[in-house]
Image (tube, rainbow, N blue to C red; front, top):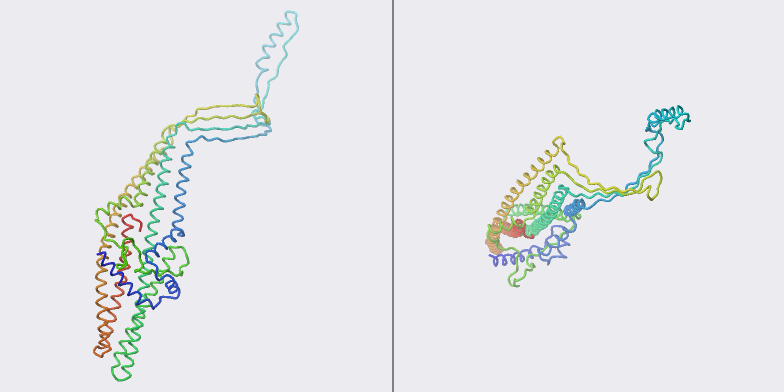
Length: 486
């Protein structure tokens, strides 16, 4: 099968050289003239690298992965102590007063003592006192301190770190998945453009031949060697091909615009026209032009490989692990937290250092929320449902990968067989057209027979070229489904 495909690729190269005299547009014609001999695989890889460097969606995926790493660093930071500087200076005027009833407490005793002294012939010695008042807020006050907080037991921190790590891993796998998808989309869309462009060239070559056929039939009719119906039939065939050529050119333009969209550049930028015959694969000989298409291995083995290699599945696994970690964090909110607090600094009516200013405190703080109206229970329920939802998504994604693998496998095998049939059809149509051309030149075949042969050849050539491009697309889709680099 591989040798047959090599021979078919060589035959397509000859067909493309024959049809290369026509152009789909001025811009594409310039690009084709500059890069006509570049292998299709090289051209596709060049566009893939441009797309990976310039695609805006992929750039956002990269930023998302970086955000995940930053979130992981932020979660890990809660393991370390937190050191802060707090400074406060206050000026107060008025406010509440605190009264110490010294007079009310001591004056009765002092009065009694004075009376005893007088009764014994002495003089009073104890004065009467008034109540003392102190402002609760000092007129001037400063408080400057260093505050150190260190978690000793906080079960929510490890769970948050595990969730952040899993989310970062999921973002990384998401970037890998989109990178592979972008590679496949660029390759497939470029082959869509190549197929449309080659079809336009083949149709243009057919239109040139039909124009010549119209001229010959008009000459025959003018000389009385034919009837007017041969001219009308030739005109109808030429108009049909011209209409087909216009539609094919429009399809090529649309395909080119989509490729440029994926590459994040102006939509009318010319594309390079790769050559099938110039593809270079190690281990191939010059007598047998190489091909990147290979016969797919056993479906069961390919599906097993896909389930292990697809980053989409790894992304969902990481997301599921993050959901499980969030569930652990929700459960941890029900447990107590213990932390160490140390404060040191200076306090007073003014700024200063020394015995009357400096202070230090150390605290062991335990916090435990005993009742919150069911908020923690609701958070646990929500986290549990999210984890169950992601597990369902994992199963669905695995089933979808198996389906994609089977479809890609069947499509690739079908395309391999279709190319053989398409080549045989093209060869038969070419031989029939050569015979019809010689018979027409010898006056042994009618114009109708010639036009039918020409139409059959054009259809066969278009079918072979489209089948060949489809085969390469199926190879890219198979590689993508299997988890290989497309």
